[in-house]
Length: 409
Image (cartoon, rainbow, N blue to C red; front, side, top):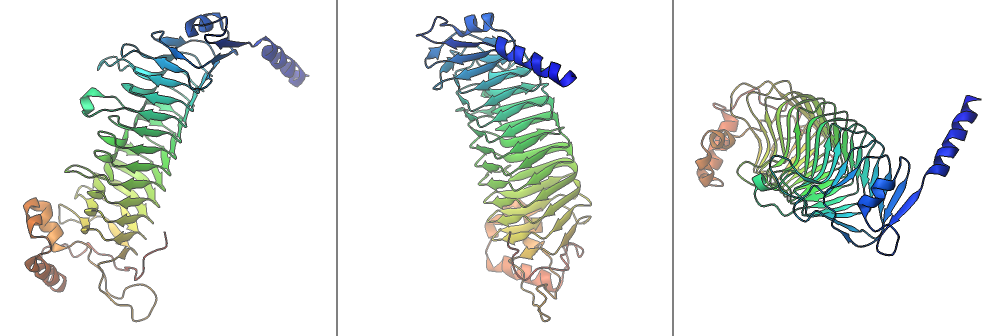
């Protein structure tokens, strides 16, 4: 009986919902007029055209749909679209030219303290911040193209900015030209999946104080400093590509003060450093490919209880580097293309342990100007001598079971 009553009430609700068309050929020509006459459950369809109506505020639970990508123009003065209701869907708009202000952080689209909001299939161009989720819950940001043209990180906001939120889904977006492509601060139990974040001024992805999150199958390419995950725990990083992040302070992935996380099946290709670790603990780095980087991994002396296992290190200038002599991390069963050992029993495991930390890497860490001597005969002789009679590199910085062949990752 209760189920029948619920179905009846839903049918009544659907019958009362209206569709309001907005455009030059319709009785309602203003988006704000349509919003004023709308009620929860209504659908507003905005037809092609350019709409310059200042800040547009959605305060009812509606579907707000664009047909043919109508343009919402903030005229470089306003936050373009503000959402202050639960269960809102925004789809199919081109949102351009928000205002710029360092204190107010005007956006193309902002969600204020709401839940179950869906923002999908929109084009955002030349906004200060692209999409901003503030204290949101179970919101979805999906399949948007978010472009800005920032040159200085102080003069541009983030592409997708999420603050103090939970259970978010950031899926299938393409972000470029912002300060950070995607920014998480105090965001928990959320997923970042199948996004492309490239050519941003600072980071492709920036985590701060955001626990129990996952980012999976994303591409972070040609960003100013790569990706940073900081002051965080229980993060899962699977199947991502970190590519061509070059610069004095650039990394494929910077890990700073994070713990109890898992880095699995990623590709680090052509970065200054594939992974740079500071103050990390209990991180498992497994089945990743480090190829053609300056440094495959930089593991600072402040790191402990990290496990680097079953990875491929190929064509890196230095596979591993550190700034101390105390080794509190383990390296097991990795493939190192610089390994010159042998396998007499043909079990695909080298019979001689491999010390991946070269003397030249130690010298370069303490004195970067020694890179001028890279590939010189003297440095080659020093490295060969160090392998025979180790004196500076730590004895326990070793892979006891190096693989003879690269893993098919």
